[in-house]
Length: 478
Length: 102
Image 1: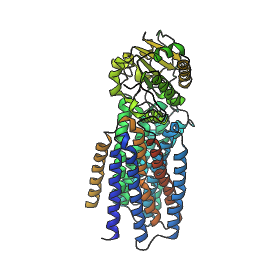
Image 2 (image 1 turned 90 degrees about the vertical axis):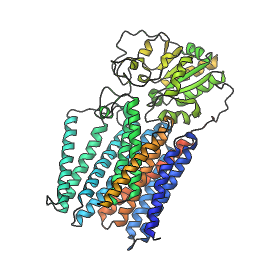
Image 3 (image 1 turned 60 degrees about the vertical axis):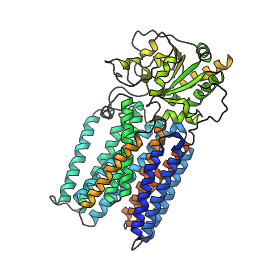
Image 4 (image 1 turned 30 degrees about the vertical axis):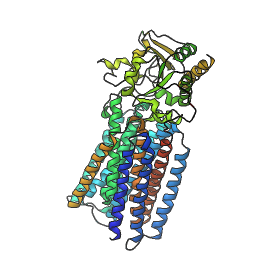
């Protein structure tokens, strides 16, 4: 067996490990091994490539090796450091950052390939040109788009949608420029158009520039609450860009891995969008409202709400036989997961059956709330998914809603409301409801939550962290 | 052309495998899943290595270098952070938990 065959088989084994690794992520019990298996596959695939480079006829120049080794050491070191030090609440922006560099790397691979062919006085084939342009466009959009998303999540850029005059027009202009430039490159590749190497590189540069700007203008107008969808979508983009890079380099392992990630990102994007009752297109176009849930003044309607003190709420919960905690975006923003766990444990110690109801879009990225609560040491069997927990609200004494809004709005069950059809948690079926909320401000859907007007509901007006702290103190004092 | 067709075949089948494998993952694990998938696309590191090996001018070396840094950060950081997340998923809490079971 020659080296080339060995390398290809090893890369195939790596790709198989990725598939099996993702498969093991089906259950919390095997997920960690799945990730390790996937990492093992990565080591095998990279090791095989290394072997291929070492044994290739003519070898690799010294500078080439320096670039590989030093580049890996710097990038790997930075990745390792940030990954080990990041706080779990900052997870979404870090994943977004890793996504950005992945997309950037994929674009660079295709750019280098294109420049090399062009400067060699040759013209790439039509298919290679198409894959190159796709890789460069998707990779560049992902790069700048993910950086903006990361900046928004980190709070460097306002979480509210940023819309500037003419942004739509700019988007259209960028798209037209990119399409025309692409057509020029394809015509040149097909021999219908004679442009020299330098000119074709300039055309590609135009495509890169418009894609980079497009990434920015695409993510800026999207509100903070839509971030779970955006991050999934950008993840799918990077996967697709990597697959395109695989086509350009004729490397099956890149194609397989990229396609896997593209598919997974695609599924998550759809799940997230469904859970928010919005189409992906609607979110990308920057639909209604947005931001951190304080649009307009206090709930405009004449809704009568009942305010409740922490002491009263504490008594209700401490003497209940079952309590369901519904944590939402507000809890993630206030970083109140530890206070939440403390309250949960305290209630359990008083003999209360405590469970957590997790809506699919709770938190700032898909499944983020689960990670936050897991970090706070809440055992995962207590974290219930929407379909499992909904029947239990009928039997539950107190539902405690912390920083969740639209996902608990009973209006979603009726047609004619912006949230109609959105899957919600049946919080209103509980015998009694306590809502911790800063104000009567609306959720990002921009409508009043009918739950708050329910006679069974008591509102505890406080920041998620403060409110939970007050409850903990009050339960302890009982 | 057959080469291209083979590649497209691989691409399409891999997408279908991806759909199949991932659609069963529970919401609890969506963040680690995304983070894990995120590390997998760090395989682009291999692409960075290939262009670094083929480089012969300053521009190519620069592009390859940046691609290596990006790809390595993506791979190493991605797997480490995913592992950190997953090790927190425990069946039993670390703190002692008295009675009260459903």
